[in-house]
Length: 281
Image (cartoon, rainbow, N blue to C red; front, top):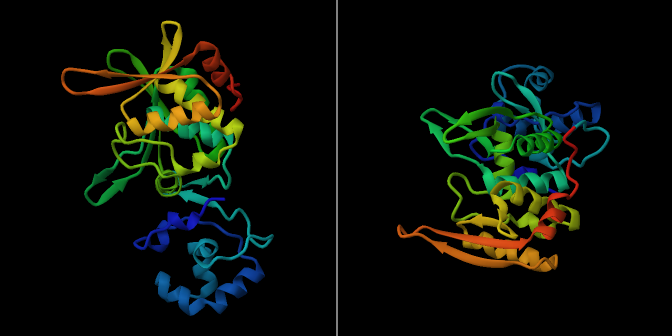
């Protein structure tokens, strides 16, 4: 479903492409037929083709459009570069777990733009004050990407938990394929385009991710709070599609800051929060 060629930018070099393929006889023959083109694109050093292939793990699947077949092993697995060099996989299809993670990132997540001069970092960050919410996010994240984020606690006025993983390939998955903005997003965030393709269970998983982040009981209602008018539009349209009654009111402060509160019944909220995503265990 997802177009993984978007993960690779023109400035990438062969050490930052990450894809791993099985070098079968058929695949080697394909590479040899395109050797001159490949050598030009990747600046192959003066060594034998076989030695270079073993060292670099050529990303022919993405770059040259090879069909998926039994000659290719795990075509969408990537190495997470860094000290650990752990293997990362990418989800090929949408799922309730992906929908939940998208909802959680919309609410309490971020994809900071961190440029430290010669070295840029690519953190995928999720924060929440409830340990079980962090645990559910981590379970879904690991199921999707095959790697667990680092989790730690911080304290300001109260304790909250941070789930963080630095990975260029996962960062690009969320920004280039899913469509999340980089940097501060609170006032501009909206549903990524993939949400339009979600089925019933995936829509409920998305809403669960939202309600577990910026939602809570308010009087006799369950309320979701955001400063993005675009997100208000998307959520209310989804509620209407699912026949969930809702009410929106605006809260404006003297300094000009605006928040929007979307209220639904506690019964509808419980139906969303009880949606099956993953087992905490």
